[in-house]
Length: 210
Image (cartoon, rainbow, N blue to C red):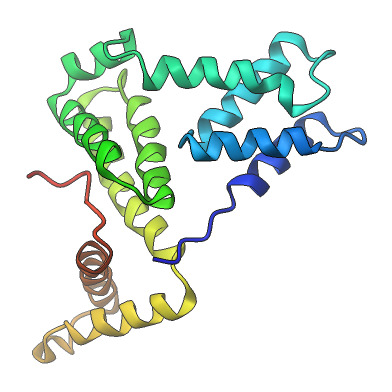
């Protein structure tokens, strides 16, 4: 599976955009980013950790390395507190969120591919942010996230892999459906594409009921 990761570049860009003024990353900074990547820390958590560091002590945050404690502190609060206040809110307020949340945690223990693990982690973090929303909003957000989940998987594949998937998805549309509207056709192709992603690349649809 040829997922391409922009993890290092995106974090570098985020930090420099917020610090600027001729600041450059050192080899120690790049090693820290690689360490975060190897630990499976989502970019969104790193971004928030950097923001927290700058808000806390902007004058002294002159290199990325000084953001490290803030990133790890935030990551531990989200990832390693088995029953943090936010997680209790998630489980108590919406059983569907709890189901998805627990499903992702099981997958993270089994998944060996770092790029795939990163996708699961990204959505785990996003789902956690829904904890205080009302039920109608949660349902709508989860539907949109499911679309984005597969779209992210698809667009990180190589051009050749994407082309093959789309051709196979198009071939799955019944011949007697040639008169369906363009929108219906596109929706069908997307649905078949997602099925193929699950089958070909062993990606688990975290939003699907088991």
